[in-house]
Amino acid sequence: MRKGYNWHEQGIILNLDKDKRNDVLDYDGYIDVMNWNEYSNQSNYVLYDLIYQNSVMSKTKIVNYVDSYMELKPQLDELGFSQDVIIKRIDELSIDDLKSIISQNVSYNKVKKYMNITGYQVCDFKDYLKYDGTALEAVLHVSYPGINTCDLNDRTYLIEQPDNLLVLSKKGFMIDESYEPGVREVDIASEEGAYLIDEAASSLEKMNEDASKLGLSLVVKSSYRSYENQKELYDYYLSIYDYSYASTLVNVPGFSEYQLGLAIDLTSQSVLGGIYTDFSQTEEYQWLVNNSYKYGFILRYPENESDRTGAMNEPWHFRYVGKDIAKEIYEKNELFEDYIWEHGFSYSLKLQ
Image (tube, rainbow, N blue to C red; front, side):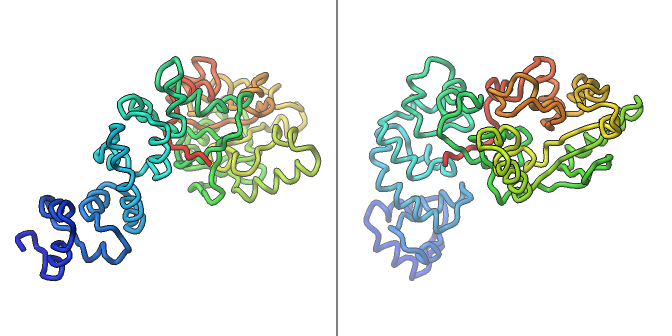
């Protein structure tokens, strides 16, 4: 009564087994047991409420998760995966993950350093332990060899935060087809309209303004594409070439940077006017190679790197990553892939 439970709620609590009843009475707070009883459950009220305070799960999912977890709890406790650990990582550890931990028979003390690496995969814990290197190196080399396209395995990962500026989008790393970034039109000469997320759009406008002061004339050939637009383009190339070659010319829908609203294809008036046939021959291209990083853009697909990037040389394709990262990539003369190898992922990836 002192905790605020009415007569009906007291009856529910008093009918629990001794351990669960004491858990409720010892719990520092009121639990809306009637609310939880709207769902079929095993009366793990304290844990329902704890997770409700620490997770974005719906109540239905919480009940299903907790009741399944409680069946696995004794084995997980033996491995050091305490209830506190599970609650802290509730949104990243599925019940299948918990079962995998048990089947691999790995202790929390041995694998917790890998769990601090964004993008870790529970199914790879045993292989991480065998890897001779840092925790970051183990996670990347074991779970993500496909960062370099030439080492791509048969795995595909869903990018769970596609609005992250540092998303690596290529074969093996998928953007959900329903994802639509908030893009706006860029104030720049273009063949079919230019659209990017606001941050990238503002940087491109500034870059174009500064280029114009030097007598350079940039034109956007392509920018944001929806999943449907990318599919139309890909299907066209697939009707002309075989799968292997078509995939080097245009990304399979769901695996394209254009869907992120961060990528642009650039050309110049000198190419459109017939003075040059290749954008890489122009002053605009040379200026971009040496200066685009100042505005947060990188040359995404340089020459002689297709085995790693998965794309043919595209001197027109620039990708927005933000000024600090673009500067680091430029100064180290490296690829975006190199940056990922050095720093890891800053967003979650779900194995499909």
